[in-house]
Image (cartoon, rainbow, N blue to C red; front, side, top):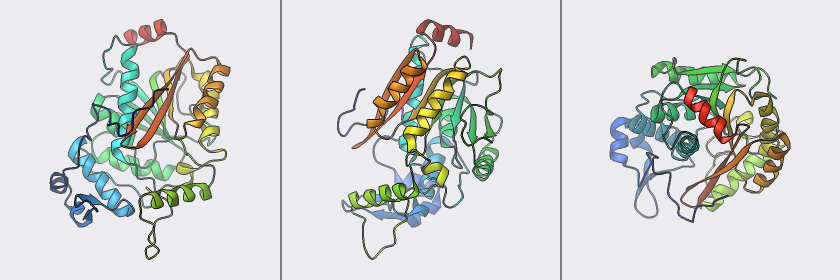
Length: 315
């Protein structure tokens, strides 16, 4: 596993390079002006402990850089940090390019499955804009999908991003992928925590690290919000991804690459053992970084390099 050096930048194709241009962001999303503050260094920023500010900030980024004219999520649902989400998309594009003679896979001939898309539907929005991919976006929460449907309809994306309800809370691909469907890759941002208490503890730790633990202020219990199924599950991300790996074997012929974010580096070795047990042909750990924050996604395939090249040639 390759760990980026401290202070590593975003992926070169990530649209969020350098400092934010708040004048340009306010020009496309005037609501943002009310949330702009000066940080301790005198630079324009927003208060990332304010959920309303984060939602409007993300809406402005999506308008300015991705042409998403309408994006909103119900209060309490996960509001993702858009810049870091882009790196997962670009990392997958690079992985697919290795099997495609170095050429980035682009266009509607390529379908990606986003497992647990949430109300924000962020990965399909970014992936379709940057690479033109078609998406299947699943979730177990009908209210989240209804919110995502509003975004897709308002932006004319309902034909290229298809939402599907996962009726079985313990399944990932079963009940979502039809028997004759093939997708080039799957992606997932799993619930990282094993309980509500663990999720809240993680947020409090983050506020302390950011110096925002002001006793005079009521901070949100969960940074970036999030419903229970978005943030925690029994056994946390380790159990979630392990179960995904086990189920993936039954869909080996329908999926070129499976993948999932993994928040804790200590889980990688344990998950690699599970991958060996199910007999994958290859596995990859792709590292990502945003400043001091380290992240990664785990990818695996049941196809040999030759089979992957043939798949992409036929697609």
